[in-house]
Length: 176
Image 1 (cartoon, rainbow, N blue to C red):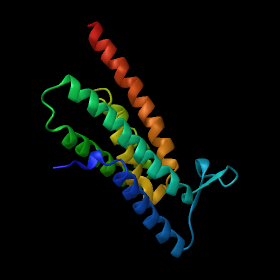
Image 2 (image 1 turned 90 degrees about the vertical axis):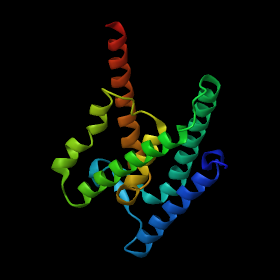
Image 3 (image 1 turned 90 degrees about the horizontal axis):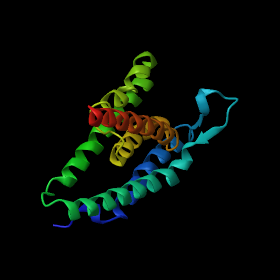
């Protein structure tokens, strides 16, 4: 059976279609939203139209990274059966995380969201959450509420923080 991961066009195409559906919904329901940095009108705005470019590009980049990582694992491991299942679980966990973050925002629960959004940083003390499929799931989960630019920016900042924390913790574990 051929894996969906072997088709580097299918996933970005699906991401483009999903983004297009969201953009069309916005367009026909009051216009495509422009998000201003720090939610301040005096700062530059980022239109959700950009998502038609950024989301498929991000998904292609993530699939390419996963593909290269898979090739390295195939060469180094003999037990490789559930690799794609782990990727899917990571993606779905991040997708759920992004959806919940978006719902907290939509229901004006920013006081909870400000702590909830730090949850990946806490997890990074114990396991790596700086893996690309987490970023893609997070971004897709927040796409409807925040468009195609802000989730990528927030996700990359979280990814970098999680990477640094995880590597520091791993280094400290290796010392002791």
